[in-house]
Length: 273
Image (cartoon, rainbow, N blue to C red; front, side, top):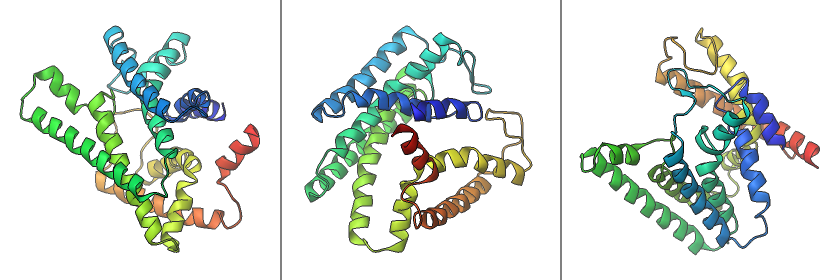
């Protein structure tokens, strides 16, 4: 509920908010917390199936203005339900599948090296398979509909996108674990770990204060939506992101010397205790 309410408040500033969706994922996950881990994969599977079934009933672009990326009836009951469950940026269906996959791999024995290897190779297999499918799509092997289906990115999150990103995650996670196991005393690695543990605080920080600073630096007006303003060059966006992230890493190291959890993480625990 904390994430759900915080996300709705943040939505008024940043319409791409994911926190209120996380509130939805966690609400569902709470009923499955002590279930055998195999059920997590089944829920992930059905989350994808339900999304594709909804595609047949409701046009995925319903209420969207893709010239500005505004959602027309977000605050209306029907529009809010539709956006949250089906065609929002990170709607429960199909994005719950990622959350369930995360819960599944979180229950595995990561002290066992075979778990790391299996995760990496399964992820690699999925990644190569989906990249192969996309290569064929680029060669015009499929018709226009299936080419668009295979090449779709983020929205709508069709099955190929889910599998290719899940596969990438299954590769990255064991690689990160291998690095931390190899350099357990590394100051840099431990600082990065602490930064990751403050994800909630930095998520809110970068779409609020970070956006304001960015807008001021480049003489832009932040609206949260697409506007007719001249876009900032990608190299400047990348440079700003790198500097901002480095500041976050240093802040994490400083903060965790005095406190166990990040600012918003601490607030969440106090409120939900």
